[in-house]
Length: 137
Image (cartoon, rainbow, N blue to C red):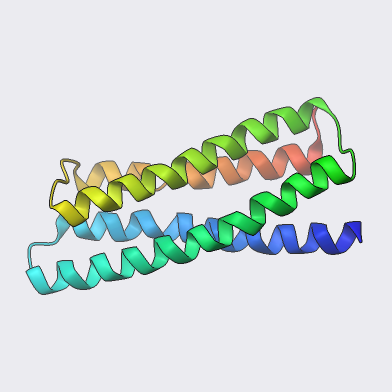
């Protein structure tokens, strides 16, 4: 059972992060867009992607909790990984807040800021994978 849960956890994590990689790229385009029709199209894409990404995040987190609590996984690396997962959840929430600002027409950030913001999930995922695979402490 453990390996099945682990496999589905990895699948949902990969899918969740795919959304976290792409959503801020839409924000880069929204921050640059001046055409109303294109803005409407991009907002629709962002809404659907955020909703889908949220649906993928839930089983990823729940399966991770099951692995942790159900199979008594321990180690200092796990505490660091859980802290990074909390940051990923916070990043996901921040993406939702930014989407609401775009929907209200209240964006105050530049496309350059969104390009840097887009790098955060890459760093989080890399650190999480290193902690899980290498288990440095």
